[in-house]
Length: 183
Image (cartoon, rainbow, N blue to C red; front, side):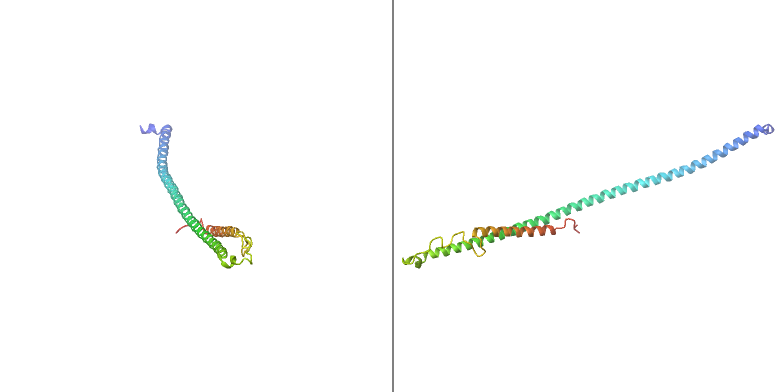
């Protein structure tokens, strides 16, 4: 029986069987190799996905922190500007009230002087000396030392105070740094 198998067809069959067995073993080895490689690639893929998710989460957290810092900065700038606005308005009102009070004192002082002149017995006692005409005694629009009528002087003073406070307000507002972060 073995001699029958040892003919050229039997040897070819055995050789083909051995070749197929060797190919099967090679295929099994390659399958194991590629399964290991596939597991390695899958692990790399999951690591990359995890790194990407971490990066996205970090960027979102950084953007949220930046938005919060911007909001704090906006609130700080708004508070500083509101403080400047209140301080400037209060100082403007105080200076304006003081200028008006000074103008009222000056005006009442002049009225008092003209009232005293009218009540002076020397001014009306002697008929041989005529009294001064009303126009020569001074009018409410008479020029003061700065050569402005009193009403115009008050308006000019008010405008000068307004411009002075506006300049100061602009300088203070410009000094507020909107890009400075609180620490």
